[in-house]
Length: 403
Image (cartoon, rainbow, N blue to C red):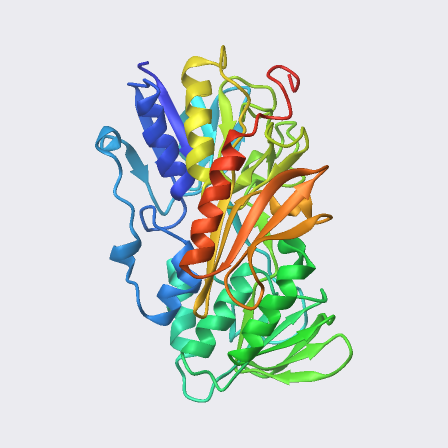
């Protein structure tokens, strides 16, 4: 307990990992390394409250638990490489640090469009700095906004832009409906209607071929050759795992960092991964490794991974979280528990109706695997009732089956 744990990544997953290492009994040193200059903060409000000017950085910053106040934080610092066999990481300032245990918590970064045209006027939303710069753009009088990508972040940004008074807000996506991938057609159609009622325009089934403009973007060229006028473009087209620093260690980095059922990386007892960079099998559902970019995963995975790193997995059941997320758009909220994406073939209304507050259930082989509430407090209360039911379900993969 006198050595050093290194946590690679200083966002929520890194913070929770440091706290949970202490909770698991680690009394040695803990160093958290992150490339942003800011201490850990809450990211979901970036595309909503921060863009709308209703939240400051101080209101987003997390306060570490008392047990983790002795953690060393190295901010504005990037890990450029790792030698797992030697238990060493190299930093961008040339320093080489030894470790007894390593937590991979480097998360994701926004994917960017590789299209011809100007770069100025094109934005992503991943950091507090991104959101603050974009807010300045969205509050310009008469601005026309094109959001590329009709997923959760894209639709949240579109809703916020409408609320800020943008002259025109258009969402472009090659898929036929917004958020259809994770939610299915039933809710996706209703969400499109609610957005359109509040002033968002959708151009679906179309890709982006390029951008017009000189010094900055003035239009978005679609795959059919048509052009959407745009003073601001927000690219919300997915994310890329920050795993390049792990190259050369024989790991599966195809989509994040592949782990086993205890979040160990590459079969090593001294390396674990947490948060949305981890691709793990969830014993609650099946043995297929998946990344999960939901709010609950950093804390849940950090708790499990810290126990494994400090004390091993003896007697510890496989990691089997119940993913949770929410999304505020306009004046309604989406609240989800479980894994709706695994039950898109059997979607049913469980409570309420689509015209108002509604709770939708997602089933796989007759088993409820996820619920999504749309609307206000009554839908949220219904979702909470089903959350308890989901938590009571036994894991489908028994202990030891994934080893």
